[in-house]
Structures are given as C-alpha cells and as structure tokens.
Length: 470
Image (cartoon, rainbow, N blue to C red; front, top):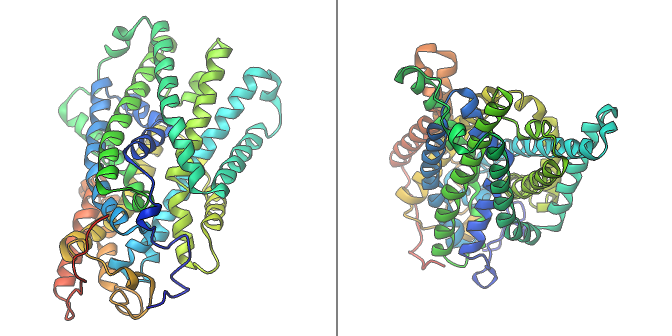
C-alpha cells in the first residue's frame, strides 16, 4: 500500500535499521546535555527559595525523575522497534488525522520551552557582554538584541539537522558537567565550605506545611520532562537496539538531573550565605560576582548548555509535530522555524517572572495537558496492542488506524476527560489536590477511560502478527 502524501514525507518515514547509529553513550550524553541547563538549575533553586532544605529539594527532584523515567522508557519502545517519530506513533491510538491533536498540544508546550530557553540564553549573553563592556548596560534594547541573536543561533543549528544536534550533545555533556562542578567548588569556597551551605534548615515547621509545597513540586518535577516522555520516539528511532536506548536513558536521566540539581541547590544555598538571600536565577547571581573571568567562563558554559538543551528537547519534537500537520508542505526545517516564531510569541519573560510562576504555573499547568496523552498512548500500545503495530497503515488512509474519518474519538474523549479532571482543582477549591497531582490524575483518568471505551467498541482492535524487535 503506497503512503498517503498527506501523511508522509522523508522526515516522518521509518528509519531503517542499517541507518540507526545511536548507542548507549549517545542516549546517556543526550540526557546529560539536556539536564545540565539553566531550567534544571532553576528547578532546584526554586525549591530552595520556596523553603526546602538541600536534601528535601534533591530528593524531590530524584523521585520525580525516577517516576517520569517509567513513561519515558515505555513510549521509547515503539521508536526503537519501528523507527517512527512521536506524531506517527500516536496515530495508532488517536487515528491518522486525530494524531494532530496531541501532536499540537506537545508542540505548543515545546514552543513555550523554546522561548524560555532562548530568553535565558539571551540574558546570559547580555550579562557576559556587560562584563567585558560595562557600557552595554545602558544600551537601549541590549537584552533584546542578545535574545534574538541567540534565537538566530538556535535556528542555524535546526537548519543543519539532526546530525548537528547529535554532535553537540556528544561533546557538550562532559564539558558542561565539568563547568558546573567548577562553579560549585568556587562559590562554596567563598561561603566557607559545604558545611554552612548544607546546614541551612527547612523553613517548613510542620509536615502539613511541607506536604502542601512538596506535592505540587513533585508534579512539577514530573512535568519538567513530561514533554520528552511523549516525543522520546523522535530520538529512539535512531537507536541501534532497545537495550542501547533503555540503558542509556536509565543511566543518563536520573543521574544527570540529580547531580546538576544538587549543584543548583548548593549554589543557591551558598548565595544565601554570601548575599543574605537565596538567588534562584543563575544569570542574576553571576552578575553579582566581582571576578570577571570566572563569571565569563560560567556564562559561556550556560549559553552552550542552553543551546544544547534547546535544540534537542524543544525543537526536534515540534518540528516533527508541525510537519505532521501538512507533510507535503512542512519539512523538519520549516517546522523548526515555526517553533522559533511561536516560542517568541508566547512571551517567555513572563513565564520566568518568579519561581512560583515557573514551577506551579508553567510546569504543573502543562502537565495536566500532557499526562492524559501519555495515559492514552501507553494504554493503547502496551495493553490493547501488546506492542504490535501495522507500520504501513500508519502512513495511509482507510487502514486499521482510520477509525472514524481518521479520528479515534474514544481517544479524544479520554484525553478531554483526563484534562478536565486534572484542571478541576483550579476552579473547585476543595479539589485542589487534583491540580496538585495534575500529571498523575490526567494520566490515570485518560488511560482508564480509553481502555473502557475501546473495550466497549463494537469493532475489535486489529493487530498484525508479532514482529521481531530491532
């Protein structure tokens, strides 16, 4: 059966096994490079600014990343087995046209993240510029020039394609970790060592106070990577084997996130010892240093880390998602340019106004949209289809994934139910816990509703014969 041109282009096509070159190191370094970034640092420092002590903050982040690793590995399986990207994989559950609904949700969240990372990178460049040219502080629109310069650099990397992204991750990961450890060593020396830094007590007086902050914070930690937990097939489609991608991710994600989160926790705690208040934004913190060379090196590292994370975590997925809307007109490169424009329009400077807006507004809020998508995808692929997909039918009309005019309305209803229940806590005060657990609630509700609706369908789920895995 020939692929339908409205569902197919070379960027969405399955990757043949002989063309898959990513091994365990590539996936481990991918996660190190994506984790070692300013948003990770701000995630940890925001917990300190909110009142946690160092071990509470690091423990919350470790637990959140162990939890999100589970859906990450589950969704990664189809990418490595069939060589398909996320927007093609999700056609199995939502239909060949209905897949655009979760793909656009994921793409819009990624655009927001792209804008956030680009704003942070622009701030870092502006701070570095002020170190070497103090007069730049008075230059009209200086921050905006730096912001759009960094935006253009991201677009150049996107235009060069996936191989450039792979190269950046491979060389950037060890370099970024080294710079982070150097920054930790330098600032803790100024604060009198790790002892004073890690002795800062928690500001929560009771278990109840702590839990009211901990629960939405944990949801925010899961929400942090809930985006990539959906589109991880965009990367695992290049895997040499299931073992390579699974082992690389299991080694890279929790380890890198926890280590860099500890650096953020320790440096923020040190800032409280040195300056009398916790400074959660590293760019602002570096601006207070009186050692230009150290600050400049650290800012260069932050710019490189932000570029690494931005193109891998926030451009690959929406580029494929936008391409999926109209494959014959929108290529991966064009999708990347659309991501860049939409990211600016989402005004990232407002999303980073303070730590509560960042964690409890942005991270928890969008997890209510993405948790239900993950619930439907995992329930469909592992429970209903038992990992069997008919590859050709993912790219054509009138196949087994056609459903009703290309849309599986049972999946759409399940998605809507999961989102509605998770967001109910925002409008009904006694049910606030539903929003605090938004990702978990949405995931469970959507998955359960989807299975119930599919089991009640008149037509059975059609599956091909079991194929061997790559």
